[in-house]
Image (cartoon, rainbow, N blue to C red; front, side):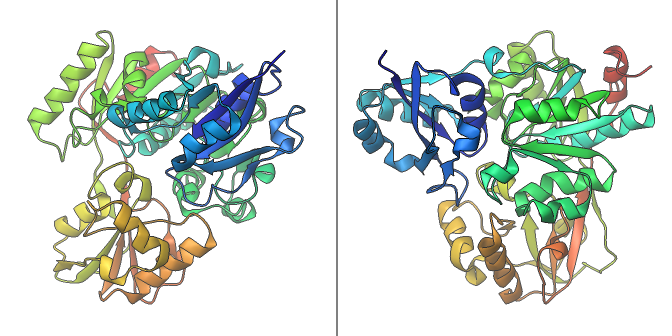
Length: 441
């Protein structure tokens, strides 16, 4: 039998999962390559034989997505499988055109075959865009369940950016030492550290079937903490999707966020404290148009400053959560909101001080000017972020990233942390939802 030649387009997450659950060990397909985008440092690596299975004794190479036309010709590719998230529909179809013009089919895998079934109840938290508020929603749900005596385990969407993929097949995070043991990047720490602070165990990695079987052993309830606006890897008992009225209309324009909205049981319209009432109503209307049965919860993300360092009238450098302000498209985040509300005298433009890959990030995302994205995909980039921060002419750093940057770098000026947690407004709230779905009494 002649095997169908396949390339999986990805970003070191969904692509590996799709391979594992759909293509691994299937002799009718040969996955000749992965391509990578969004995440630096992935190109040139290989999906290792230990994870790829018996049909791939040499593993599978990972190339730059920019090389896709040449790769299709080189490997006589029959099928391109799109496997990453937070992509505008127009950009998605440009990828399809590239594949089709080179002679390959282009496909999107459905949710049913890519969602694994758990032995315990699963609450999935997803979004229509990166940076809508999934993480604080997951933390809020975990807190409610723990207060009721439930054993809660969070399973996070994959981010295997730091160490070798073999070492990251199944990761369990219960202490800060685990973050160092798995050589976590800043983006990974942003997602794991807040859960660890609350005493919640987090699983992540590459092989989500194995991860599921380990996580089930410790949980009464599994919380799927989604990445970007991707769909869940596990079939949810309850599916909650986050909408962002600061980016109204994006719920209709980005893949696969609309899929999440159409699937969801509950839509949390977040950031109602900072969005206009008109935009809040707009996204609520869109939610009901796409999913008439969805239950809508309104919420805010109030910003608080953790450290006592004075901010008023001072010159501040604002560091924001990287994915939110890069491919998430936001021009500001919690750090900027805190700077303005606390009366900072000046928000410093970080671009003149940027070095190396940080400078390249500003070139790639020209909408950024008054915020420094917390890029840290590996030791070199963390070092360049540290160098950029230390070169900046300012009195202090106001950090809107969920982690304590002081754990990963040495700054020559104070770093003041900003926190943001979910705060539901009115009824129904998340406790009402969990009670209705019989997760709590």
